[in-house]
Length: 270
Image (tube, rainbow, N blue to C red; front, side):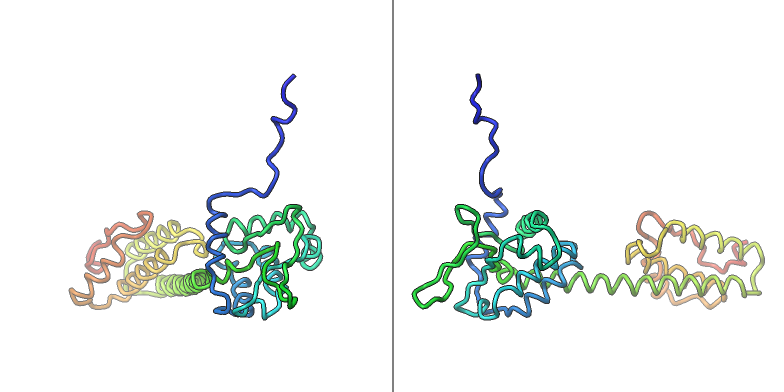
């Protein structure tokens, strides 16, 4: 008969090089440089970066707020000793779900775990009763990575703001162009049909505007503005301005627009 112990699963928390690196980074944290309030705000905002889900963010905020404010002072130890069952009760999730979320937060480098032999969480106190160490959920990694994570949040918010602005600009430019197509009277039906066809090809290549890249929307908006100028038969721009416009519209993502537009007025190209 074979050895009955050969198929046993390893006992203990899964350890990876990345997790080991996070634990080492946590030990280098300068406690006292970041307040509990700053960490709570960061934990709330991390969802916009895509690093964690809203439920994981809720758990992370709960962990931060569980530690007393003085735990984040220079002589403090921000380690959480609540059980998974207690944490699950506070966020409305099962203990098993909390365990999986803690594992995900560990993998994301937002917490580290200091385990005891039986996985119980408890503090280690000095003779004065102050917590000097313990086994539990260690929040020092958030302090060590605060500037990095805060920059990620700021960048994500800036990109989101730019995307909203590009979307509004695109929709406005398209609306203005379609109005111009419907009301212009100085061009032949053939010329109007040609430019309308080009507009619809651009719209089709952009696809769902709310999901399109910001750069693509900006370039499409610039092209729509150029079409409006052609419809209104405005004088051609100076050579320098024309070169700038062409550099904007010539190479558009996904081959949206190849520069085939005749720079002469539409009527003359017929």
